[in-house]
Picture 1 (tube, helix red, strand yellow):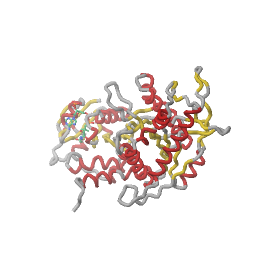
Picture 2 (spheres, helix red, strand yellow):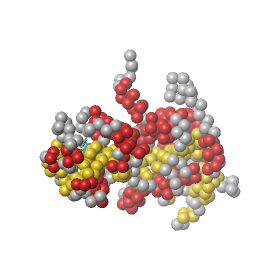
Picture 3 (cartoon, helix red, strand yellow):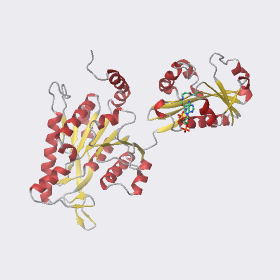
Picture 4 (cartoon, protein in one colour):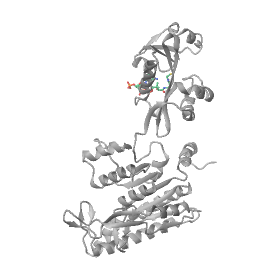
Length: 439
Ligand SMILES: CC(C)(COP(=O)(O)OP(=O)(O)OC[C@H]1O[C@@H](n2cnc3c(N)ncnc32)[C@H](O)[C@@H]1OP(=O)(O)O)[C@@H](O)C(=O)NCCC(=O)NCCS
């Protein structure tokens, strides 16, 4: 007997993650974490367990880390103060020593955790090789508005080829927040900038940032999806905290530089990386260059997603059975709403040419996305397509959605109001109601 509390839920979840496993294999993800994550051993350990899982799934991983709290702690222990300007540390010679110690200590800590392999632990059987090195060439920020940032630098170049070679060989690449200059000096960099530059150099598929808080709307509710355009507007609205604004700017530059997607994940959420990557709705904020959702004519490769949507409705009698072959054959009649690769809704238009009429059929929206206007948008797309075909009358047959059609401007009609050819196909046993709309 199973000892799992909800074995069905586990099996369902595991099966649902299969598309992500396929989609992510061989992809490059750059993950940026601040020193706050590594400051808490338990949190870092569970994060590393998640990394191990990603590596086992064949994802090419680059981990960029910072060490701000560790540097602060070391300076405090020595009785020295941290100095900041414009949100950036001014790294003097004393701070630089702390930067080197902290960066080294964090690196060792992460490498140790990635080297675990004890039986009966999530790391059992893991043989992760970690590569770290001088991938980042840095230059000093210099003097800005009269402030000399000394050993605080910015990224000048990323040796993407060297990182890619290690990834190719199956290693996880660890990049610290320090860079070296051709003059042999060490510079303290912001981990956010390093993560952005590495992701851009590698044209990574994803860049993940661990942040304190997610961007939120006016009411404080987290925004789970943003386009680059929406991020620009958020930054203009100027109510973001300085760190959030910094990360959002990095996200915009990375997307403009060819990175596929940027995800912000709350660093306190246990398992946040897995939830964000392996569930459709996610828990973080996904930022994309273009909108994720499109309403478009259906294509043959949508048939699988359309079947998943309509088969349960066919099984309970809401929709008439179609089957894969018929869907493939009639794909040109369909519109779909796609969201990030998942088909959320579909509708078909079947013109009856001689009578300037068309049937709206197979209208369906996935249950978890109903009442959000998708049904109405699909209807509008079908109406627009009908108008271009000079169709004047739209009709629909339904057993369960009568009031939806009434609310959309249809009126109930007799079966005799249908085009003749459709009347002869009318299924009296099914007893669908007929609705008509002039367009
Ligand atoms: C009918 C259907 C496509 C509507 O999609 P949707 O995206 O939820 O619809 P919208 O968001 O545009 O409209 C939502 C409104 O319609 C109402 N509505 C949704 N389904 C309804 C139904 N079956 N009967 C009556 N009203 C319904 C909602 O209550 C909501 O009204 P409100 O805004 O006043 O609260 C969807 O419910 C569905 O897929 N149903 C199963 C398939 C089906 O019956 N198809 C029609 C036969 S072709």
